[in-house]
Length: 280
Image (cartoon, rainbow, N blue to C red; front, side):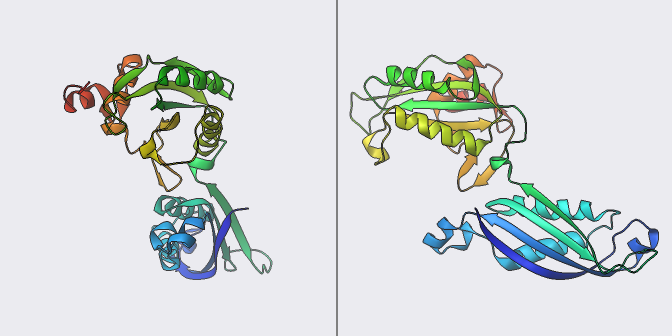
């Protein structure tokens, strides 16, 4: 079970409802908020950047509740949830809106609507998506290591539609005669990005990746570079991958199998040109 932040009974005067009168006259609403997150990083760093400030969450609720009047409470609840998902590292958000003042033919103590939204990184119900993967190795036999990892990749619940030839570049950090090998695979999957990342880590381990310093070189590393059109700043997974725009080997391998590829709205071909000639 995920860690949770719970804020109850946020009282807001707002004008929402089916009738014109409801949308003209403010009345009290109570809002309950539950935000699921992984608090482990915040607990270790003691840094607000890795969690939520309660006051910000309350202000998100107030801003949406006091905005343009709408007919349905469901509309406002969804807007609140999506606003909070955009704000920070939430895994999911649940919003409940209560009211006791609305037209009815008999006395009613309370009416409420609850909506729940999941961060797209963790949502397995978004259908089939296209992802671009980077398989990289610092091993002397890097091309063979990556080839074996690709065989394991094909055993997952994915369809591998295209794979580039290996691109090799000097890796002076590991020695003057060392090379870094990169292969790009285009896959299609119904898994969420987070679920795919976990499966890829299993493939890495099976193919010899161990815990240790990046500076020592890695036998295999598999990264999700893009996942559909999804953009994410979540601590668990940034999309598109933050190194993508400057990784010449990755861009070259991707462009070789998809000449129309675009990253952050720009053609990959133009990005390659902007990086200048290869050092290799």
